[in-house]
Each structure stands twice: as C-alpha cells, then as structure tokens.
Image (cartoon, rainbow, N blue to C red; front, side, top):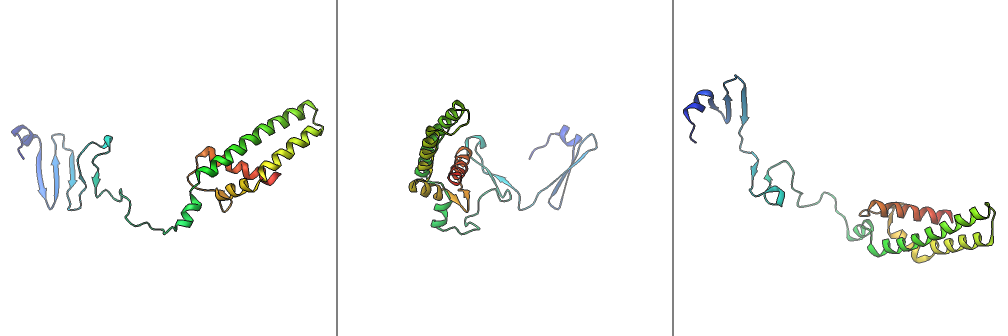
Length: 167
C-alpha cells in the first residue's frame, strides 16, 4: 500500500494487535478492528442480485429447518388455488343475492316477502353445499385461514365462514 507524503503527514497510522487507528489532522481518532472473522464481499452488484456479504450474521437461511413439517401438515397450511376459486365464485353469487335481498327489503319497507324468503333460501343453499364446505375446511386450520392467502382471500374466507354460521 502506498501512502503519499501529504497523507502520511496529516494522518499518523498505528497498527497494534490487529487494530488500525488513524489520527487525523483534526485530532479525531478513528479505530477499526480487523479480525479473522471479518465480513467479506463476494463481488457483483447487489441491485442485480449478484454478490453479497459472507459471514454477515445469519443472512443466509439454515440448510436444515428448525421445525420438521410433514407433507400432510404442509398441504393443510398452503391454500389450494382451486378451493380459493370455488369459494370466490360462490361468494360472488352470495354478494349478488345479498344486494338483491337488500334492495327488496328496502322496496318492501323491511317487511318479509316471498322474494325475501326465496333469496335467503338461495343463499343458504349456496353456502351449505357440501363442496363449498369441504373447500372452506381445506382453507382453514384450527378456525383460521391457512397460510399463503392474500389479504383479500383471507377476508373472503372469514366472510364465508361467517355466512355459513349465520345461515
């Protein structure tokens, strides 16, 4: 390493037991520890996904997971796309029927009509369908939506369970 005379005069370098201390012209001392466990950079540009720091205190995932999850448990935790789609289609139909029911109630000044009864019956048939219940059961673990659902899907599963319980 080459240090010019001007830099050497303005900075006094001291190397003692793996430490480098730099005393600058403004009398501020900067100490940097050098150890055998230092962090090294592998090169490349971090913005393009290349490179990275080695020895950076657990930045990389462990090779063996700390919790053993069986395939059966994993399938219960991750929402299946077909089940989400089925629940979504049924809930869209329930929303349409609910808006029709609300419109009919408003038109009849809150009185029960044959149309109200028919709309509630259609909603009950949709949410009490065994296929719908099975899909919903697969999308819940211990009464809560499974992992891997978007926030919209999560809310939809909660609403679907609420509709089943209210009918």
